[in-house]
Image 1 (cartoon, helix red, strand yellow):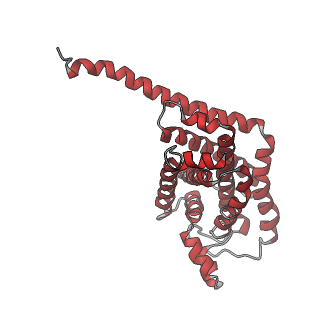
Image 2 (cartoon, helix red, strand yellow):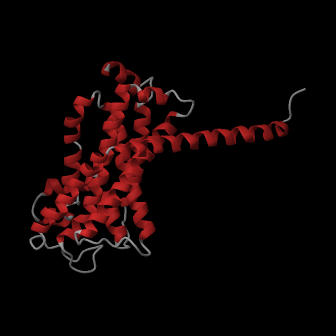
Image 3 (cartoon, helix red, strand yellow):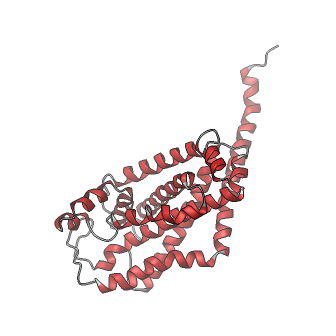
Amino acid sequence: MQASPLSTAPAAAPARRGRVAHALQALQAIVARELFKFVRQYGRLVSALVRPVLWLAVFAAGFRNVFGVAIVPPYETYITYDEYIAPGLVGMVLLFNGMQSSLAMVYDREMGMMRLLLTAPLPRAWILFAKLAATAVLSLLQGLAFVLIAALLGTVLPLWGPQTPHVILAATGGALMLGALGLLLSVHIRQLENFAGTMNFVIFPMYFMSTALYPLWKLEESGARWVFVAAQWNPFTYAVEWLRFALYGQDPGWAPWVVCGTAAACFALACWGYDPQRGFGQLAKRGG
């Protein structure tokens, strides 16, 4: 006699719950591993904060009264230059950690850790998502550390209030997008020796050709048309603008859609690249 579909349903439910529990346990283990690694690497936090703190304490201080920021959205009054670039410097922290995660992925691949991880009895996309989630958590913690240091230096961002959930959402979206970009880049970086050169063609163009340091209208007004166009096509611009508008409780427009769409596209391409039958398997053979 064939078993009734109704009789197999109760048996399938515990198995399904077991798979979900297994997936969540793997997510927790991968995130915890990255956090423990980060806690032991004190220099990593210091190096992540030195750049934005120097920009805020030295560069912004020197140009505080040189660069005037007009009353344009999301601002309702004139602001100092350090207040303008603070969201961009938070974006810098997220950007550098996203790229740092790419280096960690290349290292794990060379040491064989990534190959071992991808053989786990879990969907490849879920394992990569766990790595992405770990990167985002570390990015947000480093961003929070920078905000606290900025407050000590006299630059206080409006984090607390009705806009707080929107600020957290914007920061999380930016961290996921930049982490997914780092994940995608790790597919194409064959060896650790190639990391520095590749990053120089990613980090600095993304940062300087964005609104992190200057508004779009100033670029257009100064005649830097090609930089203005590049900034409009730069997804990092939208990550910074989403965070900036969220801080002041303003509508960010298309920024969330661009950030989330870029994150989804980069993550999908990374999953495709880490398929042993496609990019990752062949890349691992060439990389030795």
